[in-house]
Image (cartoon, rainbow, N blue to C red; front, side, top):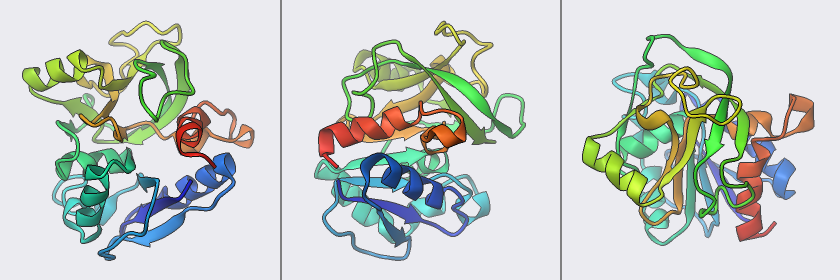
Length: 230
């Protein structure tokens, strides 16, 4: 699996993503600076978490106009898998690769803790290693993680089986108490129409090694390895 991690000024989870991908696949991904205009042949592009451009203007808004984004859009249109984690999810919505927006959290506070996620679909290259309805424990770390979209967009996401992950209680029940940021429909991760682009607010790279206290995050990365090979 040939992978690349995009690095923006303010990225702070880029090395974490690199280490986690190497741990799961045995291959170290490329680290690509955002000012680059081209990408080599790749199977996977990861836009990592952090605070690209210091989250000035609006989270992900400035990064969405970096030179590398044109190449990412081209690759995504050709079917290359793209995963945006936390700030990466924000970048993908700002760039128009995913619908909706990420708003400030319901309580207007930065949240950094483990949350529980219910796997809503296994019909994707990002979740095929999971079981339907499986509950994962993965950390979040964000201030602007409240997913919002217009009712018609939400209806399409639901109807097209494009909600990948939902915040839930430890037993898998989708409740308001299990929703850390107020996201509509408890959405934690969504897919594009082609199902090759995933945006998610939780950080799978932070819980992908037993030394980190768990491996639930590795199931997302292992799903990609199952499809793309290692």
